[in-house]
Image 1: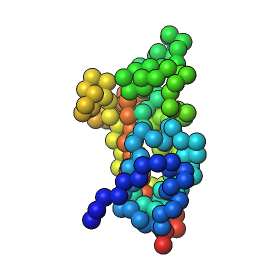
Image 2 (image 1 turned 45 degrees about the vertical axis):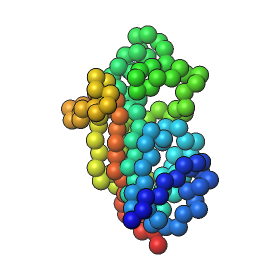
Image 3 (image 1 turned 120 degrees about the horizontal axis):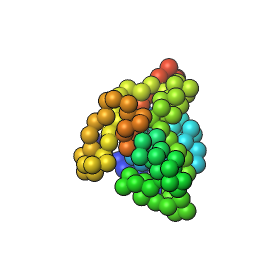
Image 4 (image 1 turned 90 degrees about the vertical axis):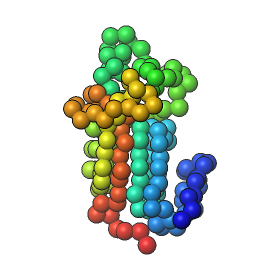
Length: 150
């Protein structure tokens, strides 16, 4: 099976695909940068069977401390931008995403919390206190009890 890759404006191009066009859709470090994440996830769940979502965890403890003690918008290797030039328009935590999935009847099939602070290329899996200790979250999601597309 060939691999289809979509590069362009999500908001315009994903709606052109028929239901169940893809087995997997990957949105890596994208969700925090879109204006309508609920509409995007709804559309992606219609055209894809499963979605892999990854995003920076804005509740990582170093981010919290930087804001609390320094009083500046957080910067880190994972979030290298200043407040005025960041592409991120949403602040997402692992806990926020789990709550979002529950509210929208989206099933989290698998999830992993990763800390890349010391090992940028590979990262370490975080099992203890992931919302506090992980720099990234990666989720495999599906439709849940929603009407199956098609």
